[in-house]
Length: 438
Image (tube, rainbow, N blue to C red; front, side):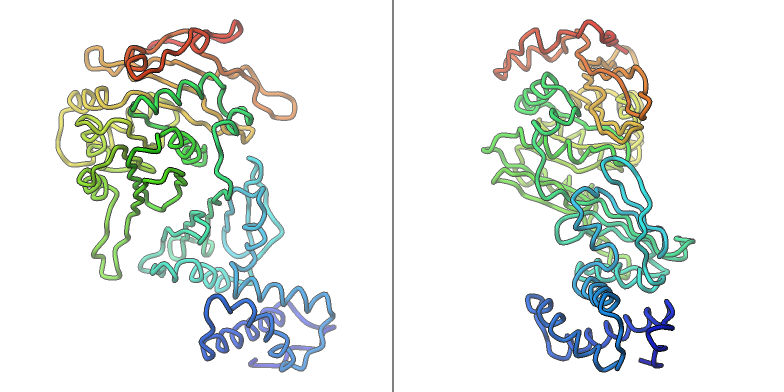
C-alpha cells in the first residue's frame, strides 16, 4: 500500500478504498503468479486473504474486517457490489447509473438500492470482469458494449464520454427456471383460452410476431411459445446475445459477432438469417428483428419456412406492422411501400402484443390476426384483447382479457392441421368489449 491507513478509529472512506484495492491487487498478482485455475480460484482467495491482510498490520474490528473480506471476494470471484443483487431471485433487472446510483426492478417495481461502488474505476473493473472473458472491450473509442454473464443474463455497459455521469451497467437477469405456459396463465399474463389458441397456432406452423416495448416480457413469451414446437423439428435460433432457452433436442443456436478492434469481421443478424436458410431449418426463431433482416425474415416466411417466430419493438399490433415496414425499407432494396405491405400481409399470420402495465405487471394485451389487405392497407383483426377498466387505490391496473367473438380467417388452416378449436375459445365474456376489425 502506498501509505499506511490511519488507526481504525480514524479510518476514512478513502482509507477503506485504498485498503480494498491493496488486498485485491495483491491477491490478483498471487493468482497470476501461481497460475491458479478457474476451479481453484475461490479456495485460493479464501485461504490467502487473511495472510495478505496481516501484512498491513491493521487490526480492524471483526465486523468491518468480515465486510471488507466479503467485498474483496465479490470483486475477485463475482461481480463486486452487485453480486448480492444477482443472487437475489426477486430482482429481474439491475441498473447502475454511475458508482453511487444503483436501481433494481423487483416484482415489476423500480427502486433505488443503498449499494454503491467505491468510484468510477471500481465500476470499470467490474465491466472488464464481465466482458474480457468474452473477447470484448470498452473504452473511449468504443464506449458501448453488449455481453452476457455465465448464467446467460444480458448485459449492456456504457462508459465515458457517452455516459456523462460515469460508467453505466444494465443487466437483464436470466431466470434459472424456465417459465412454462401454465406459469403465465397463473400469473394472469394470458388466459387459458389464449394459451390454447397460441399452442394451436405454433403447432400449425403459423408465422408469429411478438410485439412489445422494452422490458415488456417479449423474450419470456417467445421462450414459452417456442416450447410448443414439436421435438422432431430442426430449430435454428438467431440472437444478438443468446437468451432463449429452448428445451428441444434439435436446436442450432447462433449469435451475432461484434467487429474487432479494426472494425472488421462483424457478423450481423441479417447475415445469420440468410445463412440459416442453407441449414435445412424447420423453424427459424429470431430473438428480435431491428434492421434489414426483417426483409430476409419475410422472404423466408413466404418461401416455405413456415412456423417462424420473432419479436419486434412496438406498442400496438398496428405499430408492429409499421415498424416491420420501416425495417424492411432499411434493407436498401428500394421497394414500393405497397409491395412491402403485400410481403408483410402474406408472410405474417399473427401478432401477439405483450405489454408492461403501469403497475409493473406484464400481460398479453392483444392477439391479432393479420387478415390480408384491403386496397393499400393491411387489415388487422383482434382475436383476444385486454380492456382496461381503471386503476385501484393501490395502483393495480384493473381490466379483463377476453375473446372478441371474431373467429380468425385462418381457422380452416388450423382445422387442416388437426386443431378444431371449440366455440368456447372464441366466445367473448359478457362484460368484455367486442373487438374490431381495423
